[in-house]
Length: 355
Image (tube, rainbow, N blue to C red):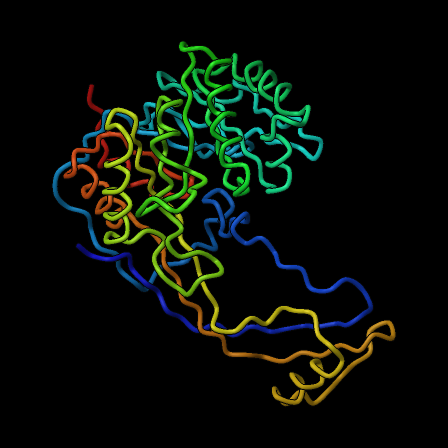
């Protein structure tokens, strides 16, 4: 099996720093930010011709009983109903600072053709997740009612809570049980879980227990390497094999969906942005042989050029097909893709839906 392609290139960056009294540097949540231009954002006259070549896919088509794909709210134009999907996950309604369901996408905004459409619910705060899961607070019962109401226009509801605190493990399971009961058996109910290669001690996301209360369990088999890790593949074949083997041991075949990534990441050898002490600012100016400091509205500012090595790992049609074939050879016929709009459009020519 071929591993995901790594790109290495050197980038010259001009830096412009200014210093003033204020807040310390804040870590930007890069995992929640998407970089890159969409096709419609690139003017034809500015089109760049690549100097590299990618492997051309070959072999048999991928046959799937279920093909799940995520569509971002406000990026509906990146999806069309000709894409071979059985299930579209509309991302996402979120829990706001008051523990209320907010930002529910309008079902009428997305034409999914004959596919099923699922409302995805996210909560992106660990402390807030605690308050909505713990039954000792008043938020949980009302939130379940609100989810049921919002999900009425959809074929199903999906829970994607990725920041469940350790102490709320049991509360998370009972929340899923209560929501499953409230939705009723006619409504599809799915849960997203992070990748595991073994059962962790006091695991917050126990696959087997979660599977008891859901119609499908979506394994997010990606982010093997992330923004804060060393450079590496988003989902290597060897790692995904281990994730798959553990999932198959703990989740019934009819409920298991293996998730695949379409996206990539880059890592820089040097982080140039930051907040600095006076001594630190003078140190980096001296190290980079800055010859001039100018005053802009009485604030000192400087520039220098640095050589930064950037390493990128991404997914193309070839690499995603290798993962699909890994799962298909193991008997898995339900796969999901994060997310629509990030992929090489050629990939869909290799997917065939079966009954």
